Image 1 (cartoon, rainbow over the protein chains, first blue to last red):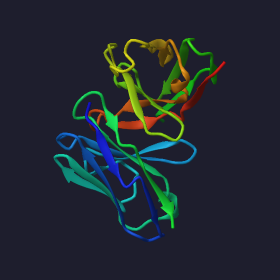
Image 2: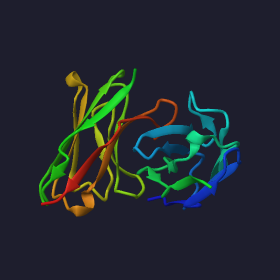
Image 3: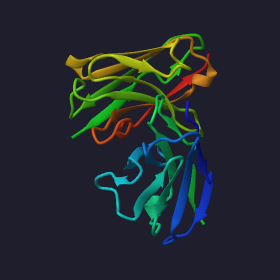
Image 4: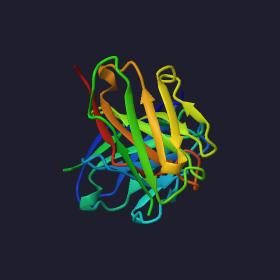
Length: 107
Length: 119
């Protein structure tokens, strides 16, 4: 199985700050990399698919980039509703695997 | 609109079988793949398996011997059954729809159902 290493595991940040979350795959995943947001109540929301494509309705302050084994999610200016858990996920090969998550916390 | 809703028992005895139902609306099970994903308390997400739109299934090899996924298209339901439950199976179980935008991209998720394995 492809291992997904997500860093950092937690990130204190301030409103309006620009933040980047990284995700590294144990092998190349051909840009089949997706990002999700999970709120404390367990609700999971899709954000970005195939590395850099924004899900409909997701604010443009979210963006994704990367290639090969290294990918990232950037939030350009943090809003109050952005403080949550974020997970990367690959589907270049089965089984789909997720990173361990990044907890974005208010500083 | 698209919705998925998991249902099932909140408590299961060790060594017993877990049965969960994912009831979907707003799309057809014969057109979209539906996956099961689980999340232990305070931990990350683990893919369990998929009901392909054509009716076949695939499973995570780590769970394959204990897991079965089936469906009833007339009722818009996908079922998960997992036997020989142990404490490590205490998790929240989600069903999710696979998006047509990309393979393995889950564009709609249920709210999750928490299952505790305990006597």
